[in-house]
Image 1 (tube, rainbow, N blue to C red):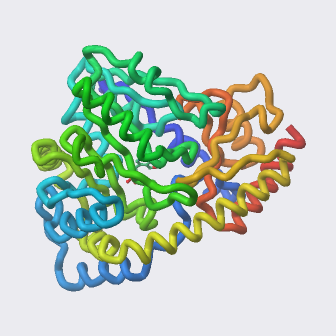
Image 2 (cartoon, rainbow, N blue to C red):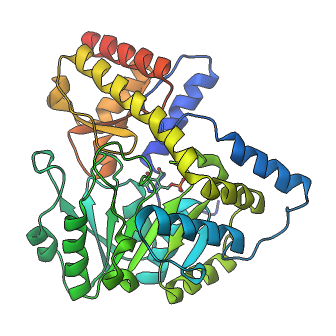
Length: 386
Ligand code: PLP
């Protein structure tokens, strides 16, 4: 038997979802607290645009960098929403934000290079960096410091091999939001060391408190910054697979060439649907965000009541990053905890260790309100028994 040469593991979130799916297929009830998406329907505006694209025969290959209408509409949106100044040549449409991150890492990293991440980090960053033959340089942060590193922490981790820093603002798994001042300090530091910043901003539309600041909105640092955007989260379009990279024209050309030799870009139908999403961004995002804010508030108040804790709501995204100690669970690592919760209680959670932070679990409030309350009640019953 021929065996694969590539050493790569499945993303931990996908592993737990697959186990949950298997149980569901066998007819078991699953309490899903691991959804990585807002469980709301994609807007009718977007669905109608996709149908119109199919009916009118817009079903052929698109330019590898994306249809110009989408690049235009996406640039117009980031520019008006976040004060950026991207032109069409500084944008490329990708197969979701995830392929955008992969393509950027391929474009910016060589084997042996280092890429800085703040822990907890989104699960795929480390694997993507390693796929490039590069090394993730992880800076640990702590809940008591708002999950943010100090400038000294970042400076200490820089050396001659450091080529990239990935910033996730707003953040998965803990909803952390960086202020304009904090971002400016990070950009000044990375600029001084010729380090490119990949700013993953796929949750920018799901900010409930505070103001979102884009790394792409600082003219002084624009050339060294690449912004990742996506239709997945704030337009509730995860299955359509439309993401965007905004960066200087040379990086964009490189990403487009990589696509021309790999994915050939994303579905043309999805791209036409995404044009209407960006053209109606304010209305669609307001709807998704208000649904998610309601779910967040319900989730936090139910969680606090059931477990007798006083957790504050996260400022953004779709997740709560909860310490096992808050649940009075001691001496159990997060992966074992989540495996047992699925095996014995049919509760889908994601272990903190998948995000580089042991002792925590991630709970999502993306599901419907009824499902969330039911799942939290089941989780409460499970923990009482365990
Ligand atoms: N970045 C973060 C922080 C995410 O949580 C996700 C998805 O969960 C992505 C990027 C990729 O999203 P997509 O590829 O659906 O745009």
